[in-house]
Length: 111
Image (cartoon, rainbow, N blue to C red):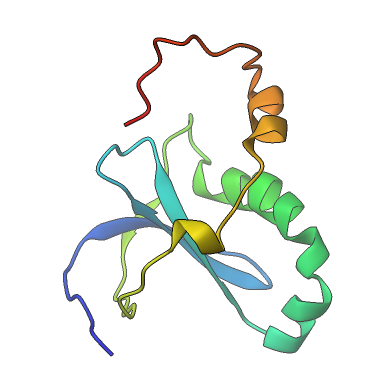
């Protein structure tokens, strides 16, 4: 298993049932959240509530003061992985509707 090592401050929060870090992408407005449950079996039972947990509780905990994330230096080891597009099909229409995006122009460049 390949691993990438590095040290960086990341946004981190600890709630009653999970610990969460946010790894920023190159465009820091975007990021990947890693949710580590404290009780794995209970987490599996409550997995249906994960979107609500991510959207409300985690966002509220990570952005307490005027939309500024709570930064903390943590040691994280993550195995290298690849997300293959053919394995991760997501219907973006509902997401775009929720964001208020009703129309995309033909000139849009999403590369």
